[in-house]
Image (tube, rainbow, N blue to C red; front, top):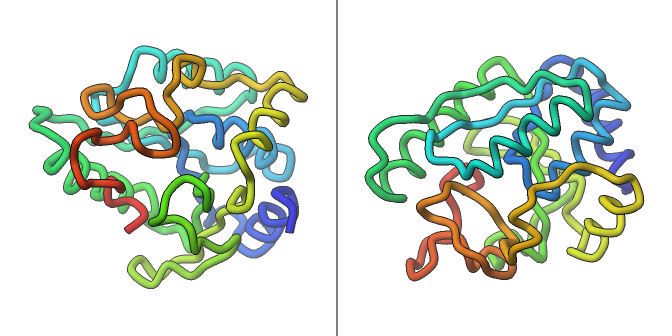
Amino acid sequence: MSVAEVLKEAVDRHGDRLVMLCSFQKEESILVDELIKLAPDARIVTIDTGVLFPETLATWRAFEERFGVDIAIEDATGDWSGPAHCCGDRKVAALERALDGADAWVTGIRREQSATRANAQPIEFDEKRQLWKYNPLVEWTEKDLWNRIFERDLPYHPLHDQGYSSIGCAPCTNPGTGREGRWAGLTKTECGLHV
């Protein structure tokens, strides 16, 4: 299934009970571009931890301007005390609030990102949350993403140009391929949202 086909199924099946989670990475450049064509009033939500890169905040503004959307915010701010606290409790609680009342969500998960995502399917049922989960880019490669971004002149996170393949909170993200720059030096590979 193409990205547009997966998103159309999500929109047709779930309507206003569909939520897209947005972290302003290259995957979301493509997903927001495709989703708003199908559902201009789609609910797009970001989680603000209070320790996002300034470049993330600038990309957020660029998305809202380019796509004409208002991205809802779920607050996960507090005294940052390391990835175990911020990522686990605060981000997951913010996700649960974002998904309250929804019966499906859209993510930017791709199989090539990490071993923990290698078996992801375009459409899955999230048993933990009892929601449908749509991963329209699951089969896409880095090359596919960049081809689409440049072909459509989409806004994208400038830290990707500085060697950051995956971008999270500033204190826990370094340059690196795949997800190796996230929580560098730790065994951690996921923040808890997709576990």
